Length: 80
Image (cartoon, rainbow, N blue to C red; front, side, top):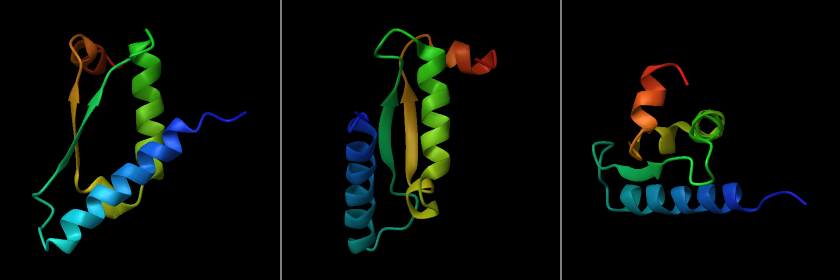
């Protein structure tokens, strides 16, 4: 059975992007998400995020910003 969480997350991002669009806010109005290897593998979590980010529409990509969990920034700088 496929994990339903990614699709729920994408649905939430679409919703928030639509709300910001309806408010007629430009792309300086952001949707902030937190990244971080909640399941113990930060590098795998980051790779999964990059893959999913590339699948999002440009409208959402332009609004998205992220805050890495402690330790993830170091992994990102070291190329995972």
